[in-house]
Image (cartoon, rainbow, N blue to C red; front, top):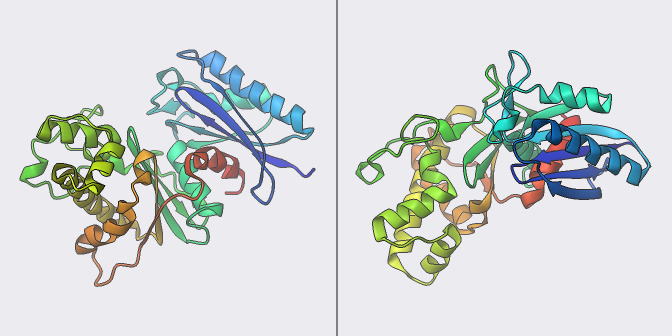
Length: 301
């Protein structure tokens, strides 16, 4: 068997590994619980997953890691991580020392975007913006197959920009955990969608429940989704005006709302600095597998 690419997705509750061959076919996949609040145990768990995978397949390979944070361009330690035990730790260097080889590491949203750009929904597109609409809002930018990192390692982090053009129905500006107010994430995450519906109508529903009731003709749920789509359209238009991607791929739980792909072009177009709107807005090809696949494809970038 030819050399494989191993990808590891380090999440808050699970660590997943995948082995891809040169054609992108899955040769192995496994997941285990994430050690909670224990950095050393997390490093050891990842290393053992890689070693076990290589023993099972009888071959060594390259290793890429996707993490819920970023690597500091100053000292190589982890910053902005939801898994707080990673913050300030030299994760890439520690894994490299433990496994005895070079490791590549990237933000999980960058891994999602890379996966969809390499062999997913946006395959062949020159500039791809991959976004996560889930418990938070994140994003990654891929330019001709290469992740854009940036001077502060925050390229694509559109969720902590202010929501464009807030009107009366967007006020007061919600507070964000980043200590700012009015961040895109506070309007467009899954919890934000549920919270706003509850605040307006007194009923707590999941985004999927809101969408189902809107389909059944419930006017309050339809109004909630129309506000959501208008906000998302304005937010994406700002990205389009800045980097002009060929394709935008939606990820996270809210990417399952089929109506977004029908309605977002019209929501974006009035705010895009162009007389025509040509950006493809696409569902993910690999779904929940995109993050771990993108980690493996870090060795294709």
